[in-house]
Amino acid sequence: MAYITKYGSFWGMLPQTSGRLFFVAPTAQYVVEGRTYGASNDNDGLSPERAVLTGTQAISNCTANVGDVVVYLTGSHSVSSTTVINKAGITITGVPGSRHISRPRANAGGMRNRTTITSTATPTDTTTGAIFQVAAVDVEIAFLHLTPPAAGGVGIDISPTAGAANRLYVHDCTFALTNTASTTTYGLSIVAGLTASKVADITVSHCYFQSGVSAASGANGAAVNVLATTHGMTIENSTFELKGTAAWAKAINVTADAAAVLGVVVRDCDFVNPTTTTTVITTAILSATVTNPGAIIAYRNYVDAGTDFATAAAINVISVAENYLASVATNGGVLATNL
Image (cartoon, rainbow, N blue to C red):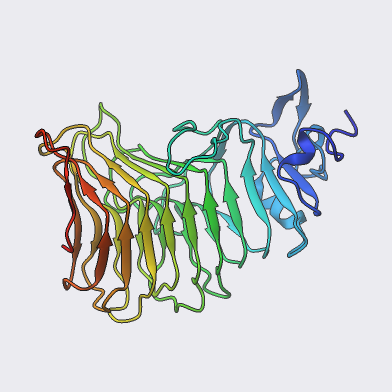
């Protein structure tokens, strides 16, 4: 298996790139193609048979802006601290066993990717409790199932305090906010205080966000939580589903500098509740502080009965088109108006 990562093989297409692939094993002993190997950060990580043990080591081995890729092998990865993505232009991916078919909307693939990362950290804030912290430009994250810890935990924390995280592309990831419910647990969060020059043109596409499980009560924080000045962010083709037994206050939260947010687009997303009464996503899109007219654009979204489509500081903050609120009546739902 010494040539497993060479071109022409399945492994050489994870994804197709002109850079190198660095493999991360889920455990110290792991199985690839029926053989058992030992993972170590002393390995070079350049083949599935020589995987490193931590994502931090794999990222350290990468070279910025040459197409290098970090592949988390199939299985259950557990982390106790945040993995900082500080190399520009690299891709972080799981093995795409749940690869989605071509489609206009989610979710044709699995609601849980086969490569899982669970954090066992005890958060003191959204950075220490993050699975990933993005602190570089042109990063791509894909095909991972992320389970952050409760109370301050976050799957992907965007906080480039010393640089920028422009053009981050998160796609085909599944997020499970399923630990003890907490309103400070998020799927993806952009920290407060950043200027738009640090977090411009971010895309979240074909992702699945779950809050709670049927046996657990309590509410979590927003699946996508935008607390900083953001320009040109797109949230598309994604599903937000409440499975807990208490209301989820908001699925998407844009609470940033009042007049500075521009061009946030939410399109082709589904918002799903377990009931149509009290256990609902209270508001699909909440923007309590932004005042810039037309800062958020929402179109072709479907929202379950019992959920308010959008709430904003002023009626002209969120522009809407072809968004539908479901109904338990026979009319098949109604168009969502501008607030």
